[in-house]
Length: 169
Image (cartoon, rainbow, N blue to C red; front, side, top):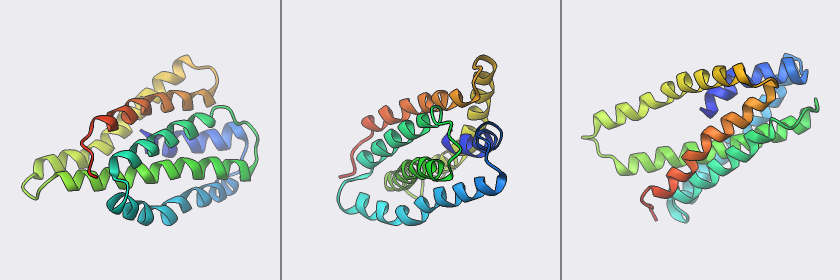
């Protein structure tokens, strides 16, 4: 849901409601994406050697939930402020993405082709579900920015589901 929200709703929100130009939006997204470049490899190493995927995945979801909800309450058109917020969302996303992939492939074998195929289909399904949930929310929410509270709430169960997975460390 997070990736769909960032692709579909965030460009509209930042350009139409906050007031950034597309060039300014591009600068913000450049800084946001740096989190992936800088953090994904160290996250993988730390998860493999020290902490484990379960804990880092839970922390990632917590960061995602908090930073996504911040987006509802910030209305200032500051490239610096929004770059920090968007970078923070990507820190959480990096934690979740790396640890989810790592944990999944540690749990599956090469003979689990159907499970692996299903795992690969879940992201496109999340785009459909997220777009539908966002559209329904916008029918009832007057302020566009409050949709990020809805998206943050949709990520809360995922954080709790991580508590139920078997720890890899």
